[in-house]
Image (cartoon, rainbow, N blue to C red; front, side, top):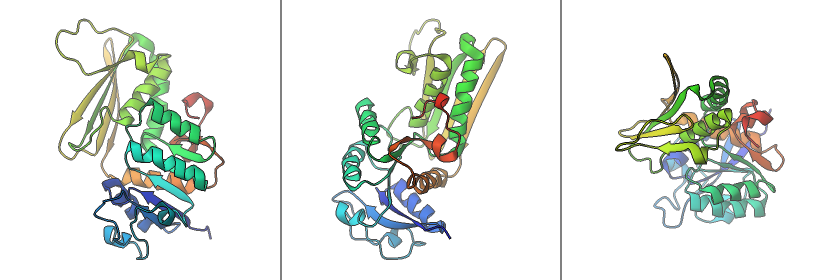
Amino acid sequence: MTESRRIAIHGAAGRMGRQLLSVIAEQDDCVLAGALEHAGSASLGVDASVLEPQLPAGVVVTDRVDVAFDDCQVIVDFSIAESTLALLDIAMTKQLPVVIGTTGLDESGRARVALCAQHIPVVFAPNYSAGVTLLLDLLKRTASALGQDYDVEVIEAHHRNKVDAPSGTALAMGQAVADGLGLDLSQCAVYGRQGHTGVRPRDIIGFETIRGGDIIGDHTVLFAGGGERIEITHKASDRLLFSRGAIRAAKWVVDQPPGLYDMTHVIGIHSPDNGAS
């Protein structure tokens, strides 16, 4: 029988943190070993079983790193960019693998993640859905096959409370298309349009963002050519989809050497051509 993985959650009382607790409770090959929250959180001192009733009692939500990470094998982080970067220093000191689901990291933040991955195993993905991971590979292949005779637009929709735009998944999709076309996304991306924009250039990738209601996450990449359109779409209908992927990544990364990984590694489709480390 496989030993249960001991997982600590950073941001345990947040929306995603509670979903991660729910996934841990439903699986028999992992256990909650720590629950960390920021100082001042209303959940400090509360047993994690209050946040997720299916969990056994015994793990208290704390803001003390020495308590939360004392008995864990891996940390899953869904917090905010500033907290994620602070966590990396702690993880390196304790030599603990980390799964990062935080979005909104800027270029310097991503560089910091890559630097830390030289010392500890880190899974860093814009989306923890296996379906999205497969779709990114498909987008790169499609863009390469179609070339610049097709105009590309990335359309994404999320709930009204999402604070960053475009989504990390939309940006990853744009990057996959740019890789397939041999373009630099930072130079060819166009984020929304207004006014007299002129004729659309060929060598751009457009992004459109929708925010409203309780949309979990819809993404479509449109390849528009002369006489035809190709639409590649992913729609999430259950938020636990992403949490299950993150916990899958946590269980996998425990056995890995230091390095920067993404979900292509976790689900076994990684190749040097797909852009992952």
